[in-house]
Length: 178
Ligand code: AR6
Image 1 (tube, rainbow, N blue to C red):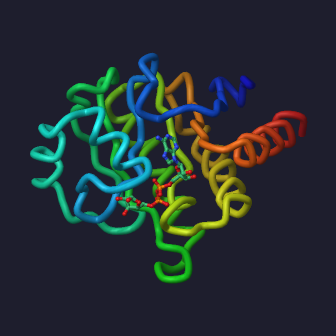
Image 2 (cartoon, rainbow, N blue to C red):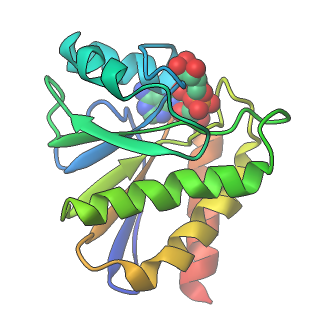
């Protein structure tokens, strides 16, 4: 599904975040040490190769809501933006920390003059953030940031389940209709 929000194309697809060759940057749902892990971090580190962790370890640790940029190595993108989401029920305020992930990633993409960025559902896997609550935070943050966006032309949300696909589509329909 594709819609335009102001001048930015928003795309939603059920796919693997590590197989997005058309995007300048993909976002990693990282751990504080920026180490290979499960879920998104596992997929990204596996596809990028071991040199990624060599760069990552120099930038670690990061705090919830922070984002850092590295090369993409064997991934087909220009950069990877690594973001630590909040652990639901532990890192608070959780909505604000999750919003910071999206805000800081978008600002980094702008700083590097990127045209396109792809996000997974940060914190909604191992970190336990409810997907429905996360989707609200994600779109509110993108809407709040959009007036500041000068370079980014496309934001893609790469989801991993049919339930998440429906949640994202419904929310995008709501805000693009209103
Ligand atoms: N592509 C797109 N989405 C994916 C993929 C993929 N390849 N794999 C999983 N998802 P998670 P978190 C979805 O657990 O909650 C790691 O071990 C998944 O279904 O990757 O921020 C790190 O090292 C879920 O909706 O990230 C951290 O320790 C979403 O992506 C910790 O997990 C995020 O799931 C981070 O946990």
